[in-house]
Image (tube, rainbow, N blue to C red):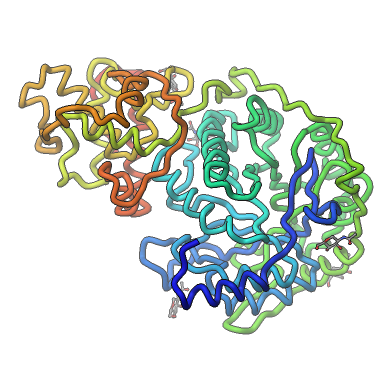
Length: 533
Ligand SMILES: *[C@@H]1O[C@H](CO)[C@@H](O)[C@H](O)[C@H]1NC(C)=O
Ligand SMILES: *[C@@H]1O[C@H](CO)[C@@H](O)[C@H](O)[C@H]1NC(C)=O
Ligand SMILES: *[C@@H]1O[C@H](CO)[C@@H](O)[C@H](O)[C@H]1NC(C)=O
Ligand SMILES: *[C@@H]1O[C@H](CO)[C@@H](O)[C@H](O)[C@H]1NC(C)=O
Ligand SMILES: *[C@@H]1O[C@H](CO)[C@@H](O)[C@H](O)[C@H]1NC(C)=O
């Protein structure tokens, strides 16, 4: 551990304060590590809606709920009143310090489950990718949170696929699960689970749950979070469908819990579902849940209104408080629990109801491979090209010869194979394609121009030894399979992938990648060059 002296003093003190018993997973249940008592989440979602007024840098489109200790300390007593032992946070800023909040939460016995994405760096269901800039965001959050004993785990995605026509996006989320798990392992962090939070879409919910759980353990989720709003007002275990949901997960082999719950029509919310969730009908299968949410905002899901240092709780809060007070699930002890349901779900077949293949998953985000490729090519995107223009360029170069020059960055889940370089940054992917075209034209000078958007550069005269096997697996067209796994970029890497990720604003990343996806949809149909956006 590297700390400055001053920080070290605080850190030592803080660590002593903050040691809670980590939560571990055995079979389909959570347990306190030391005494083996089963852990049921009594959670509250804790994140203000995107606030453009944030004092943080202008790129950051969210308020980090764990970086302002004054706010955390203001709210913890209220969280405690509703017996909260877990909060869910949707986006933290890894560049901020979270020690004070995390300590204060630990002292209150509150664990944190954190989403790894943020609004501007997340997997987009309309144009999904799993790439190095995203992986770098994910690993930064993991690095920041792994050191706290009250970190419970991570979500690699939230409600990405939400209908049949975007189920293929789940392939990229599962790749994110795989790479995040591999990263935690490679850093020798304690066992921290990586899961997924789904919404409750009748058409796809069973395929989703099976898909993320099936196949190799290294690729599968460690827990499954269900965002569910089907118990509204005076409902019941059967009327809400909780009975059927419970049956569906009876033999699931990892923990399941409600990652969001609390239908808000009608209000005040009664929270009578709490009795079911923590009662005998459900505790054999579910590990509790997370009420959506703490802050009262426009969407009217809050338990409390905050104004400066003042907190005003509402009737929802009172009702939740009464109901949760009665929730005393007993559970099982870790020692006496031998999971009977150890088999993973079977992978759903790809058909009109389900678009994501289970094997292979999209390629691992490997910053080294991108950097190797970048030094090997002789034509690349000109520095002057703005991120806004990447989409047009993709449309042009990928439109030639039925997309042949873009095979190395293909992300179409049904027209395989995935391109080995489809996980690089948008500019790197485009450079690969421009170079493929340039080589296809026997390096005619005019072939690396694209109205001054492409520029000739000196290709490395020999391939670095660390690149040889990576590049040969990827193959000249980029259609091979690279087995090295995920590698996060390192600061100052020559690839520029880090710089590209950091330098791209939220919108630019989206535009850059959107262009490519739209191209793929259109160009294969038309076979012509097309202009986008
Ligand atoms: C086990 O440990 C947890 C956290 O330290 C504590 O809340 C719980 O009450 C303990 N269980 C028993 C049975 O003592
Ligand atoms: C932004 O902050 C300013 C000054 O603190 C305040 O007057 C304004 O109402 C805020 N706007 C929003 C949308 O929160
Ligand atoms: C899926 O269908 C919806 C309309 O039901 C449409 O708005 C959306 O763009 C479609 N998404 C994709 C990826 O085709
Ligand atoms: C919920 O709140 C309303 C309004 O305060 C109250 O009338 C009702 O009795 C409460 N219900 C429960 C189940 O506590
Ligand atoms: C993949 O390509 C096929 C064939 O061109 C096309 O029908 C399909 O829509 C594409 N899928 C996606 C997700 O782009």
